[in-house]
Image 1: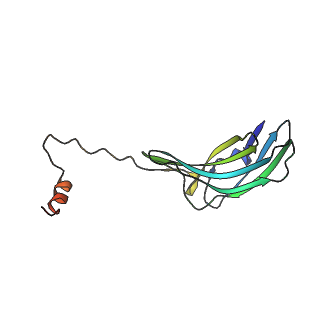
Image 2: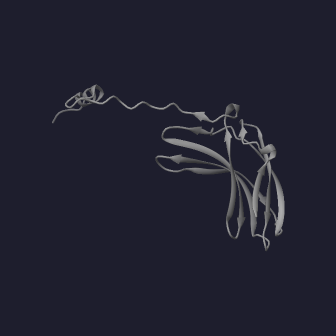
Image 3: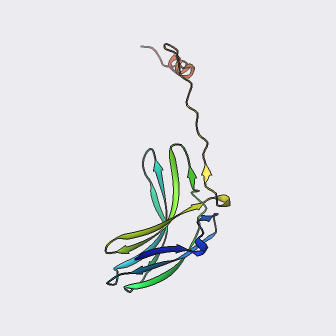
Length: 145
C-alpha cells in the first residue's frame, strides 16, 4: 500500500501557499527510501520537460509508516493549459526498491486557477496561386543572384 493524501484534500494553490499532506506506506520489508517530491511537467507537442522543485526524504523508513510533509508553492511556473502545451504540477511519493509511485495533480497559479491560453484560430485557406503577403515582402528583400 502506498498513499499520498493532501491536507483537506486541497489541490489548488496560489504561489506562496503551503502544500501539506501525509504519505503512508505498508511493505513486507523496510523500503530502501521513501521520498516525497513537488514536481512540474509539460505535455503536448514538442519536448517533454519536468523538474523536481522540492523534496522531503524519510530517513530510515520502517516497513509501515507515515510521514507528514510541507512545501511552499513556488512563484513560478504557473499551471497552464494551451492548444499545444500544458504544464501540470504534482506531489509524488516514491518508494524504493520497487519504485512504486503515488501522485496527486495540483494547480499552482494566481488565484489557484490554471491559466487557460487562448486558442489560436487557423489561418484562412488560400486560393490556389495566392501568395502570402508577408512571404512576398520577405522574399523581395532577399538579394537576387
